[in-house]
Length: 233
Image (cartoon, rainbow, N blue to C red; front, side):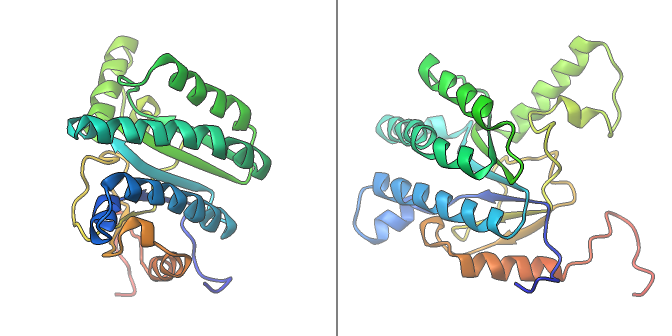
């Protein structure tokens, strides 16, 4: 990346391909998920190191509870372990850690760790890492609608986002999906109205700093008009 390239303020990832990464190596899927967690660390360091302030990761969807019980329990354990081990570094680096989602399948201990992570990092100024766990775009919108109704306040496009779980975040400038699939999978449905979309064939555990730079370079060349007209074209 050149220093004068235009950077996004907020980049979001649909992290896909852990299971296929493991299958290619004749390993159980859990090994792919473990490797995917290592990639989270690398990507977070790379994103914030380039001056991008907001990084959002789709880690576990509301539909992922349908997966085999042993895989779900493994993902919960990895998430728990990530909060425990990653928190001190995020705190030192000045990165705010948020977790959004329904938390319906999380035990009290894990909920407590989520709350503690935010309390310990909320003063960070280097970057904002948001992990979407048990998150679904439709559920987020429905929950926001219900909160609007309960408040008795009529909302518009400028006030409605304050009722979403992402109220403290700017909308993503670019959403990247790894793993070769070309779909959104119920992620940030309201927030992505004008996001740039980038689909990568790379499996998430293989995602590198070079590919991040390639994506950012492609983003720097986009002409984001938000429904307007480019008078030069």
